[in-house]
Length: 252
Image (cartoon, rainbow, N blue to C red; front, top):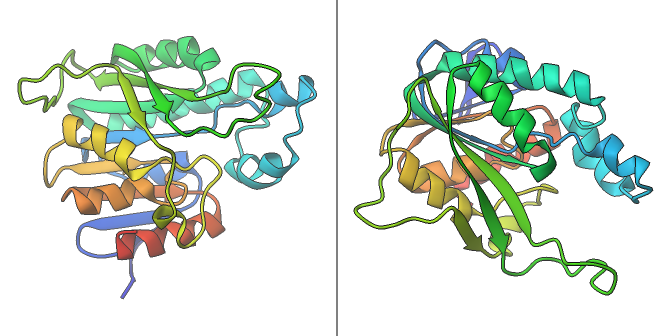
């Protein structure tokens, strides 16, 4: 049973709540220092960039990019929105709380600058390597098989890091989403549960509150339920919001 609790947020159960709406406006409803870890995959602002290159992005532009609301912004406006995002993330995230953000490699320098402006400490940039990428245009150029992630700590230099004495590299290798994760549908930029588990296990503890302000189809919420974390998710697109709720409730 889903019950309403406050404004844009609804509780899925005692441990998890989600909101349908703009990330920044929904973040404003959260209390200061109420989140232990943030992991998210915001719009990369590649819509206009790819259009200028003559790339056929119609399917993505009419789906995910159009729904995200930020991807067709010019760079200056996108930067302003990301600045607001980091301001809110700094406020809601506890001191020394970790943040992982997936981002296009061509925007990494901008993101680090904005993060540091809001008292985030830059730790490293890492790579997610997909072991089964789509071999798109394989006879024309290198196959795109990697994505970049940025590791930051809020108002401190070191946060939770559960490595258990083992060396953990800044290179993560997994397959993309499997059939089980597509059971109810999928998101164009959906991340696999195994990838999210990797970061959530290392950078947070059981019963911690994990926030994803761009939750898409809810993979972060599914991971949190599996790993006994509490989850807060925000999604702008109603179709993906409904998909996320169903997946989180059924741990799929």
